[in-house]
Image (cartoon, rainbow, N blue to C red):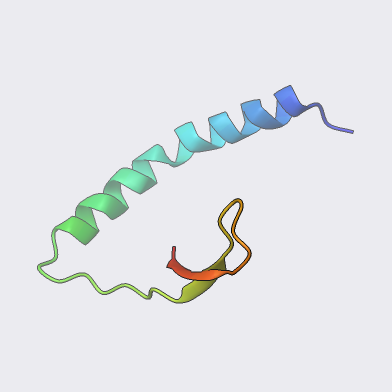
Length: 57
């Protein structure tokens, strides 16, 4: 079994390694005049509610 602290450290290191990719992608996307996104609805059940509602991620 891998310790939770080890997994957390790996996730943090992955984030550091991927930051330059995130920055480049953000710059490329924001350089466009129009950005298209797919927003499929998902069912969300709020705490204490009995009926699910439509939400967007």
